[in-house]
Amino acid sequence: MDWRRSLSIALVYVGTVVGAGFASGREIVEFFSKYGFSGMIGIFFSGCLFMYFGRKIMILSIRIRAKNFDEFNRFLFGPALAPLVTFIQFLMLIGVTSVMLSGTAAVFEEQLRLPGAAGLLLTVLLAGAVITMGKRGVVFVNGMVVPLLVLFSFSLLWKSAEFGDFPGKVFSFDGFRISALNSAVAYAAFNIALAQGVLVPAAAEIGDVRTVKLGGLLGGAILTAVMLASHFVLVQLPDPASFQIPMGAVIGRLAGSFYFLYILVIYGEIFTTIIGNVYGLERFLQTHFPGGKRRLGLFIFFSCLLLSLIPYGTLLGFLYPLFGYVSLIYFLFLLLRGKRQGE
Image (cartoon, rainbow, N blue to C red; front, side, top):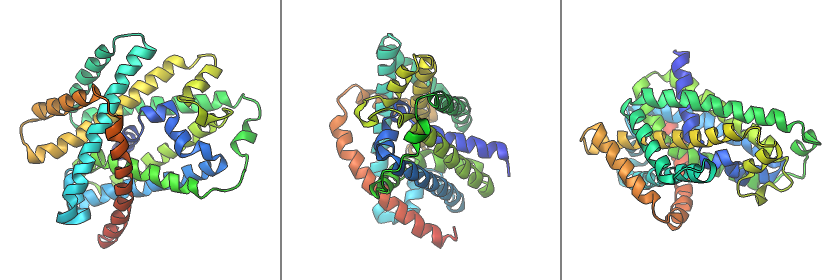
């Protein structure tokens, strides 16, 4: 077993799951922090799902020799249902990548006071360079961004501990709400099903069960730790659900001392999600259109750029709930089919 490769898998896993919604604090509030103490329990439960299913996806990928999410879906759902699931997954990967590209333009315009088009162009060029390097490039970028995310999260936690009644707000028990567990399952299901796009080809390239097993456990553990740190910070706000960018409100209370690091983290998380999604899409398209990495990469980026320039709320409003239901079914099939493989 190679510890270094296990850690690289873990970092790619974390980098693919987190995105602009995570960095802004909005996802953590919506899925966990608004439930108070029950949300903290939900984070532990969601973290267990990340560890268990991330590991299971990669182990099964090696055992069935799947090279992309389409081949994995054919094993999981069978030849009749798999094309529909793959199509929805393809749309979601394209959609999320488009939204992330829009996010880069917003970061450049609103936070750096630079042209959004310049942000888009820079991101596409950098992401294209990373993707041409294959898994090595994806691992390298995540190896820089994810430690920065961890540093940022725990630095904020340390700083926010200076707020009045920190333990009281974190551990205040206002009754257990079962909806917090439902939310935790939905969050894990959606993100793991999307992360499959990068986990399957990454596991196929490594090819060692023990290495990917440890990588899945490490990745899930890091995600749990970062989610907990963010939750502890966000519950210090009087009403976290009332803020559009909750983490920005926290930064404001800290007198902006973390502002530049925050911008780096937002952009880094957007970027890792983009390269993770494009890496998975490219591996899928290569089996159907073997036209060379560069042309496939250009096609993916061009499609995402076009979508990022038009109003996307209606499409996502339809696809996100649909994909949420598919993700729950995905969990069930993963459990059943995994048992048949002895996993």
